[in-house]
Length: 287
Image (cartoon, rainbow, N blue to C red; front, side):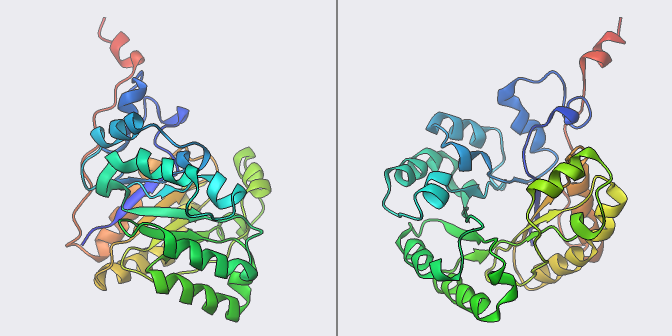
């Protein structure tokens, strides 16, 4: 029984001196983050494929049970429109090989314009991908949430290749008008997505976007605590990614989510204790 929790990134300025030591060399920041969370969204690979050396560094900084659900490059999913044999995709697979099982699931995030008429192309793409990885697909076209025929069709395609459907639950963010600058920016950038909580595989992945208010964020995730506990009882291994507009408190909130699930399932192993946090200001107090 294992629950992976994490954030959208492993380094952020407001975390320095609070959740991770500061200053901290760039090649040690992931190691510090991995003492708080046991997964991280693989957003960086959407924008640029890392070198093999970079991927090896990520592996060296994380334990074997840490998880990177890496996003396929946008040149494949957004610009190349799903060509399984592309050079960009081949370079991506070669680059991430050093991560081994840490990159057990690869993430196909599709643009909002990807609709029901494109599902056949997705089916062919997924069937052509290497079976050495699991796959998860994120869609944002409204038809996949409002048209039951489109929902069933996509589910059949995903089920046929053992792929998961990644929900991005933004209902809490849009439940009331924004109250901070970060929330106002999120209102202009984030999609208005309904809550979908049906798992298709043994390894469901959830993206949850709360508010800058920790109280509202925690209150809003209550349905997910219950659902994730249910999945664990069924023998699934879920991953839950915690977002807030500013993400200032994201590492602590991710751990709190894990703790709340563990209150329902005491047999769930706790997360490791975070590494000690020091800063230059702390050092100055010694003299």
